[in-house]
Amino acid sequence: MRPEQTSLGGRILSQFGLSARLLLLTVLFVMIAEVLIYVPSVANFRLTWLNDRLAAAQIAAMVLDAAPEESLPEDLEIRLLQGVGARAIALRGGGRRSLLAAGDVPPEVGKTVDLRDVRWVTLVQDAFDVLLTPTDKPIRVIGSGMGVDFVEMILDQRPLRHAMIEFSRNILFLSLFISIITAGLVYLTLQWVIVRPVRRLTGNIAEFSSNPEDASRVIRPTDRVDEIGLAEQALARMETTLADELRQKRRLAQLGLAVSKINHELRNMLTTAQLLTDRLDNVSDDSVQRIAPRLVSTLDRAIAFCETTLAYGRATEPLPQRRLIPLAPLIDELSNLTDLAPEVGIAFQADVPDGLMIDADPDQLSRVLVNVVRNAVQALSQTGSPNGHPCIDISAHREGSNVVILIKDNGPGIPERAKANLFTPFQGSAQKGGTGLGLPIAAELVQLHGGTIILDEGQGKTCFKITVPDRLSPVEAG
Image 1: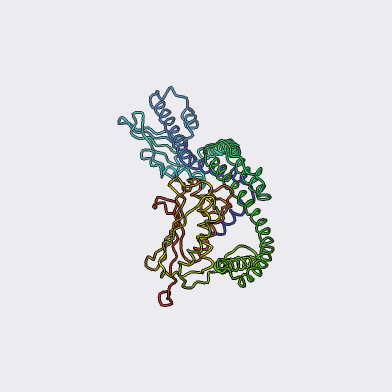
Image 2 (image 1 turned 120 degrees about the vertical axis):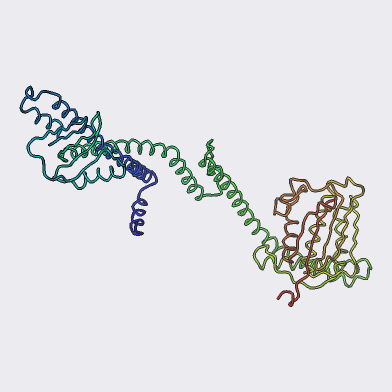
């Protein structure tokens, strides 16, 4: 089939709906099946018709041969031949030969058919020759049977062709009737079993897309267990998840707008606080002089973070400004976080070599450490420690080109339900009243450094393992 024919057929089918296409295709396939049945049937009909004529001719010849010649009417032979539809009949058997003929025997025949050697390919070919390329000349039919070695008959082909045409017409009408009944049943079945459920699916998709945040538009799966049922269940899960995600994103967008406003006001307040802390330089108290630099540094980082958030319009983290810095001072600053829960009396232990250098952005790394340690302080303040006095233990060491930081606490541990979404915003909080943002923020900042942060359950305690790799040198990077 040529490509243009195929595309034409595809365009024609595409103009109909799914139901109409199924109906047309069903009728087409049934007709193809009927054609495959018709071909051997018409060949067998021709064979049966010729065998019936040979049997009738053999009986007529045997009757004439057995009766006394003087007792037979003069026109009996002609009437017998006309009844058989033959012009001449010849028999040979039992050492005798018989010949019946009405007038002169035709000198030439159009075709000889030998029914003693029947092959289906030849039968099919001969049957369509009779239908498509008829001849006006008589045909010669040869066969055997009923104790006769040889039966030969010469007859006109037109009655055979008329009978085959009538048979073909009946087959056509029967095929059309069967096709219509079958197509109708298939159409109704497919319409009920497939088309209507598919239309329900597509209609639900269109309705859901108009307002995907409306939970009432989520499709309700039926009790079907076939592919349609599985598709309904999958669509219901997808729509439910999508609706939840869109509602959450809308809430996050609203929250982002609120955070931007809060950031703006918070920056102003922090700026005022910074101006006030500048006056602490003139206070001669030793405690004030020891705390003031840390307070100023913390306010500077808070103001810078607020300005960065406002500049970006969202809480997207900028790329880290990395440099080699000593890790121990950053860890020492974390000891003050235990004052968030002074009534608990949390002990703070640090084991960090003085000469350990880390390639990181000091502000972002400080935020990572603060978020993780603050979570530990909150957990210990709410649940205490089942293993003695509450304690937070921080250690660090170098492993090749990586610096590994371990932050442990001896609290009750993280619940199993919280572990799956530990680093997912708003979903990983295990403490009452927590926002679920501390660990996701820490994970994002560590990833910006090319590192990892994981819950290391092999330590036997609640232990977060932070790995920060050194940057590649230009030679290594190339």
